[in-house]
Each structure stands twice: as structure tokens, then as C-alpha cells.
Image (cartoon, rainbow, N blue to C red; front, side):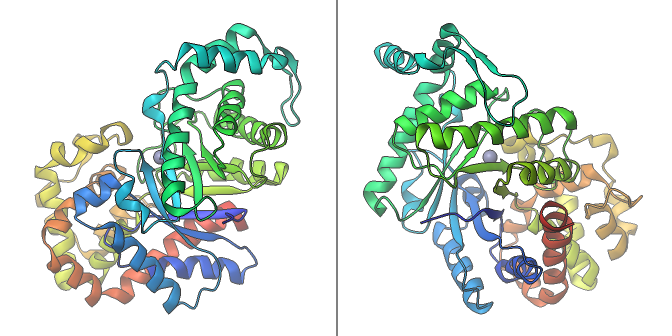
Length: 415
Ligand SMILES: [Zn+2]
């Protein structure tokens, strides 16, 4: 199985918007850009919402059938480890092996020694196409990096082999993710991580490094854009080098776990992809759920009532809802509208506060982040919420498609 040059990871908490999401990918195809849709859902999300792993597969298959999509598509077991991969194996054909927890944990010292020995030829100046200055590599550096990352690569190898034993080697796409760590990886670290991934025999087709800056859920990038652009380009250069040097799959590309809506880095990403003729996997979070709320609010009537209710309850249960997402949200609670204020809003006001349009004076990133993690509230209402999704499907679907196509695909791949 081969992952095409461009792929787009879409999340859909309630598994109702598969067709509307796919419609955005189809629109891109009509404009001449081929993007492979990848439906991703993490174990955390399944647990909070009460969906099963079979639901995501069913949704993807049904959307593809209904839209007559004859191109590849995948279902991503997002951020899995040995502890939770089994439930995904039957339904997924894309696996994001998350080994961030093992970074910094020491590997067997004999194995470290062996790895360092094997890579001694890189000591000194190493020129890599696309990186201005040669990388200056010392033996001590290789040892430190190996100490820090070898165990993570070995763990990825174990998960990979576990999945391969069940599904067969060529029947799924492998991503290795290290994005949920504290510090971004340097180009030299990336180089030896990729060497270790190759040594483990993992046919990774995409790799998710950690970048500088904050990738909060559902809001824009916060950080040094120039620094991000530099890291992104250096990683592209190292990936291209490592593919040849270590015999990794030729289509290996970067995966950006964007947490959705990193609009301000789309331009440098696009420019870098062009410069390196590189592919991209862009993983977005479950912001489609926010488009559902926007659609409900705009539809008015009981749709707006539900949207307001979700906010009101989320406000009183903030700590509980934000807990699992503490490291990836920044909510200024002083700037959250009160229940009384929200009460007076009409559907347009609610939609304007929630929709990610930074040029709109009504936009409120705090409300947006709170609602982003507030899907548990909607899940608790059971069929009341999902019935409303069915009732107002048209309004919602238009928002879902427009969001993915206009705000993400266009600036990244088309404009
Ligand atoms: Zn991630």
C-alpha cells in the first residue's frame, strides 16, 4: 500500500460528516490536486465519545461509496501504542505509531554502542542538499541522540511488527510520530532517528516530528513562523537525504499534526513543499465537530438551542473537559462569554464567535477552544445531538465542506 504525495487527515467525532468532508477532497480533485483522504481517530477520542473503531471504518466506507470516490482512502489508528493497537487492527489500514513517551528513555547499552559504531562514518561535516551549512556531527552527539531515541525507534519496530503479524507487511501505511514531546528535534536528531527507523525495518511512509511553537487545537499557530519554516525545510531536506541513505520508502514524507487551523504557517509550508518537490500528510483535529455546532446555530430553532446548551454546560465543566487536552489548549477564561451573554445571541452571532475567521470582530478563540474539547457534552445528549445533525444536515454539510476546502486545502495546495 502506497500513500500518495498529498494526504489529508480528517477527524470526525460523531462520524456523521464523512460525505461532506470527502466533498472537499473531490472539489480539490476537480481543481487538479489529488489528495488522499485519511479518516483519523485516536483512542482518547473513541473513549470520550463512546464511538467504536468499527464506526470510523463504516463511515469512511459509506462516504466513499456514496460519493463514488474511486481513489485511495485510509482509516488511521491515530497515536497508538502496543497497549491499545489491537482494537484498531481490524478496521484500520493506516497506523500512527506514537513513541513519544519512549524518547529520553535509555535503550540497552550494548545496542546503543552497536548503533553508534555503525554510524561512525557520519562523524565530521555532512552536507545535505537544501541545508545551507553542513551539519557538524561528533561521536558524542551520535551517542547522546542514540541514548535518547533508540528505545523509541525499537518500540516503533515492535508495534510495527505486531501489526504486520496480524495484517501482513504491505497491507497498511505506517506513520511514526514523535510530535507529542517537549522539544523539537534538530536535523541531526532527525537523521539518526530515521537511521534507527530504517534499522528497525519499519517501512515508514510518513513521519511526524515535533516543531517549534504551539499547535493548539482548533486555533492558529503560536510561535516564531520564520523558525518553523526553517525547521520544516531542514526536516524536508533530511527526509530526502535519509530516503536514499538508509533505503527508506521513496515516498516518505512529513506528517504535520497540526491540531487544525495553523493558517499562518500554511504559506511557508506550501513554499517549502514546492522548493523540495515534497509531499505532505496534514493531520487535522476534530474541528468538523465545530462546523456541526456552527451549522446547528445557523439553522436556528432547536439547532441553536442545542449549540447554546453545549456551551453553557461546557462552561460549568471546564476543568473536566480541558483536562485530557491541557497541553494543547490555551483558554483565557476571563474572555469567555457568560451564559447570560450567550443567551442573547442569535445564530449568526454564535456562528461568528465560533467560526475560525480571524478577520471577523466577533471571533472568539477562547470559546472556540472550549467548544472544541466540549464534544463530550454533546455525546452525553445521545441521539438528541445526532438527530439534530440529521435534521440540519444540509446547513452543516455546507459548513464542513467549506471549512476543509476554503480554509485548508486552498491555501496549502492551490492558491
Ligand atoms: Zn499528533
